[in-house]
Amino acid sequence: MILTADIPGERLDAFVARVCDGLTRSAAQKLIEQGAVTRNGRPAKKNDKLNTGDAVEVTIPEPKEVDIVAKEIPLDIVYEDEDVVVINKPKGLVVHPAAGHQDDTLVNGLLYALGDELSGINGELRPGIVHRIDKDTSGLLAVAKNDLAHTVLASQLKDHSMHRTYEAIVCGSFREDSGTVDVPIGRHPTDRKKMCVTQRNSKEAVTHWEVVKRYRGYTHIRCRLETGRTHQIRVHMAHIGHPILGDMVYGHKKPELGQDSQCLHAGALCFRHPRDGRPVMVLAPLPDYFKEVLEKLEKMG
Image 1 (tube, rainbow, N blue to C red):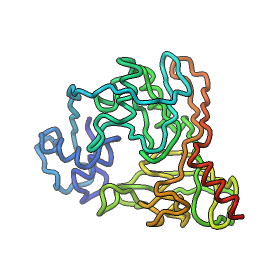
Image 2: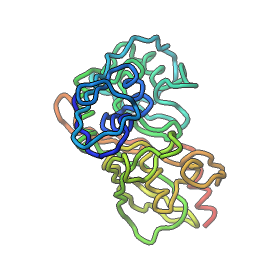
Image 3: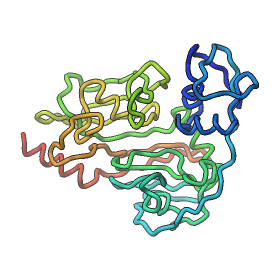
């Protein structure tokens, strides 16, 4: 693919990571080192500073075959047909193999349960995975069984016609009953594992929220994603002064109400079926950990 630089002075690796969906900066650097990225038709270095209008050509190689172990992992399948599976992922389960999690992920469980019935578009490490949710976020995740389903669902994500609704418990009280957070999100400048609200090397991010119930010092809210950036709800809620309960990365640094990870649940997923266009809506009830927190809040008055 050939891309046109639009921010003068931006580093080449940062530009490639920003404009290529799903590509991290470290992955962009590897492509540049391998000679898979050129600038105006010539070899380039990762720290090259771009000029507006520079033509950057990126060649992403075909994924290599790797041996991912199929492993029996309990999966809560809440919807399935010949094209799509929707999983209700528990808190604590990693979606795809990565450092420290090679054989205990959702992908390992999917390979055991479905074998070769998964799309290959997202590469060998993420077969069937159309979108993902954080390890410590629970809830609904769509998985494609074939490339047609993957392509159609991915396009719905891109044009915002796939609707995802989350339940969250956040710190503090809201004066308003609903609102929208519309600020861009990008990689944190010093901590590459974190995201942040920033104008630099960022992408549009929009989160709509509404109050479900107010408690003493906390609020149960429902969020609808218009975009799907990494850690979007967590970053947006922290940005407006209402970090998610238990989120010790973007919120308070000590556990509260027994929670040391975010109280965030993907409770509803709505999409058009990739084969015939009919609407599909899947719901996942609040998990036990979430209900236990609500019970504690009710007792607090």
